[in-house]
Length: 79
Picture 1 (tube, rainbow, N blue to C red):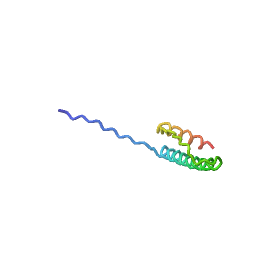
Picture 2 (cartoon, helix red, strand yellow):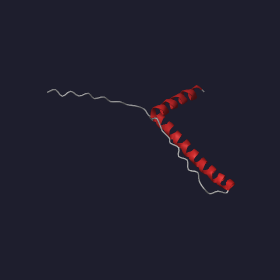
Picture 3 (cartoon, rainbow, N blue to C red):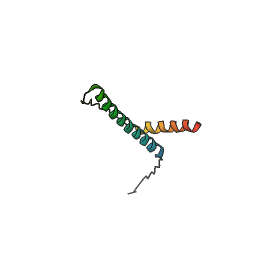
Picture 4 (cartoon, rainbow, N blue to C red):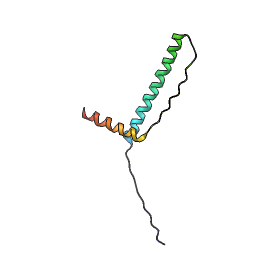
């Protein structure tokens, strides 16, 4: 019996996408810090120590991020 095999090698450079994801993560962390500070200030202004819990779902789409990073890079290179 013949042993038929198909071997496919795929190489992809994901450096730009990973950099974009890192930037998005850093921005999200900065937003979280800013919201925490705002929460403290609002608590001082209203003399309330109760917290408002808001849950924000975040969905990261690798393809969309890579596309936007690519577009951003193209725009940046023009200037």
